[in-house]
Length: 275
Ligand SMILES: Nc1ncnc2c1ncn2[C@@H]1O[C@H](COP(=O)(O)OP(=O)(O)OP(=O)(O)O)[C@@H](O)[C@H]1O
Ligand SMILES: [Mg+2]
Image 1 (cartoon, rainbow, N blue to C red):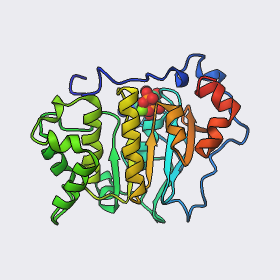
Image 2: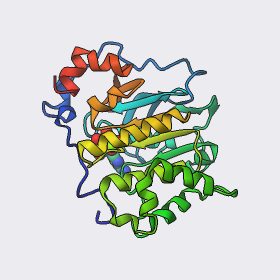
Image 3: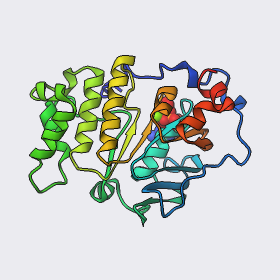
């Protein structure tokens, strides 16, 4: 796993959502299936997805995650709950045995990840999300791979959003700090001018100050009109900026609500937010 730039410094630093008591004790709300917006309404929805890796067992069980225009939707849950798997399913990196993925009303379940990028999906995976040996600027150029037009304007916007990247544009991305690398990864995804941005643990392995800063930048991106669907291990902080939140447990929707509702829910607090 030496090729993984985050292997050494990432991981769940927020003990509040780890499996301290074993997932068996996590209370499931009766009828607690997600209640996403009406299908026509969600801009991006992975709807009642069931599936796993290859011929292996199902990891996702009728799991639904969605994001509406103008929203930040956050997915939280214990390690191994299937958060990354749900994101990969929405991005087309694993076959769903049942369920659908809809983007702007169009069924894209059968499309490859590449075709989903062309349709407007930007995805920053949890690991291996930058080219460490390439410079910052080369990483951003790689992000623009589907574009045939002049992307310098977009690059300038990315540099405005993340000024440190401009300063370090000729440096190898692998030499950057954890938080800076995450900026490269988000910047790379923005280079395609996505209609929706999916981020898997954008603040993994960074200090609380850097986390706050990254969240501010993510809010800024959302304000430019790009809906954001993101997985976060810093559950409390992420739900504070979330319009909508999903708690996944063992591949299922355990709780769904606005960020505020989940933060105030006694069961969610007790089981996932450290009380
Ligand atoms: N490539 C893979 N092949 C087979 N099984 C996998 C693969 N990736 C993940 N899994 C399994 O799927 C389950 C869910 O893993 P996943 O990575 O989606 O969890 P997660 O909620 O993102 O966890 P974390 O908080 O640690 O990132 C785990 O049991 C894991 O072992
Ligand atoms: Mg994950």
